[in-house]
Image (tube, rainbow, N blue to C red; front, side, top):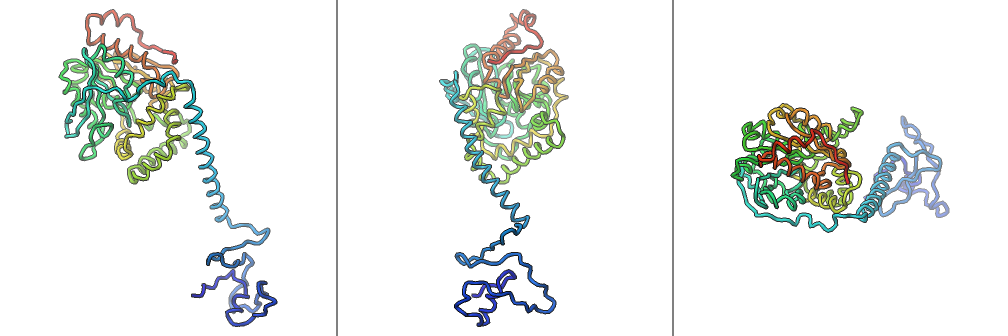
Length: 428
């Protein structure tokens, strides 16, 4: 079938179709442009000519000195920039990750994720099955982990505290070994309901609740939703790297310009929206970006000189949570404000934060310490959002001190006198 005539084809092609111009001497040379124009048609501008077909597809060859159209140049620059950027980015990130993993690592021998307790399957308020494990005996500590982690994140607490305490850990709904809710309810109210179900299951009259990040937000929701729990069964509260207000606001707080903060917030929410709409593609992209994930985990989760093994452990745990759960949990962490719940925390509280926490900024910890009556603020220097790993020895000692204060009444008065209201600890 004849190809459609185009305005850029030489006049010779038209002459050949009419059966003229078959002089072998002129074959392959462009024929003179036909000066006879149809009435009302403007002369054809010398924009470009069609070259001979390649594989049946005509290509355009632009004349020397002719300026390439803006659209074509833009697409070319964009494509070239993306290819160069992706190639350079992959090379750079692999180089950085390789170099970081080769640093001296005092925690290299730790069996992260390998400490198991006595397992129990617990049915929560809406039928969601929660995976609970307990280790040790004695006064009871209940641990609630953060977003996209599992109870294994409390590695050092699982290792060091069961010698003196009954330690209860559970996986948040949709995380780790716990099931997903039937109606995809990942609201703060549902998370607080799970926390109450675990507290009920312990059978204890008094416990200390230790909560990180999203777990701490759920603990504040518990105070609002079940006002009899804090001050009743919950005798002490430890909030680690947590907040009382919209976590995305915390993530963008370091950006001073309103426009830049808005752009970052839009990017974050857009990314989670994409995860919800196309989880399979998001999962593929996450696997391909494993090195980039490691760098992101180090940047947002740790201080300036973290253990490579700790970073790799957290990164692996984060990657183990299904992206559909990410997309469904994330809306619960946007546009909330539990500042009025702080006054309802009528128990001794420890507010711990790393001064390099980029997800829940130390300013949130300071605000909570000011608003919660009788609370203490622990600032861990050069530690990030995973301060419970980076400065586990200091934090475990503080958790034990609070537990002894509220669960072992004999030494309460002496310990209260010895401990300051705010303590700063220099990171290792």
